[in-house]
Image 1 (tube, helix red, strand yellow):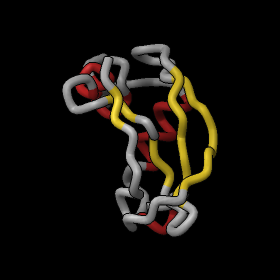
Image 2 (cartoon, helix red, strand yellow):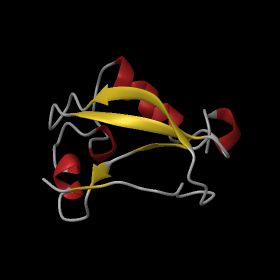
Image 3 (cartoon, rainbow, N blue to C red):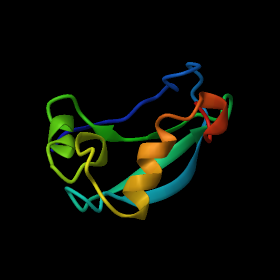
Image 4 (tube, rainbow, N blue to C red):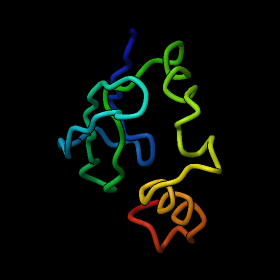
Length: 93
């Protein structure tokens, strides 16, 4: 598995981040990933993240919500609603 560490925010290009949280991919890999937040613009992203050669495997599962419009459950239903909300109604865009 190869990972790439971003040294600049993909949104504003600044390089000061703070650790936000660690999350687990519960649907596919069961791996944990660090989420950081840019001190300048507030954008949150995975860092380090899987490299281009490895990223696809995280989205192959039929259980991945955006691939499965028939997914049931509270989290899946909330995701389906949230992805159609205007940007201002979500956390940060």
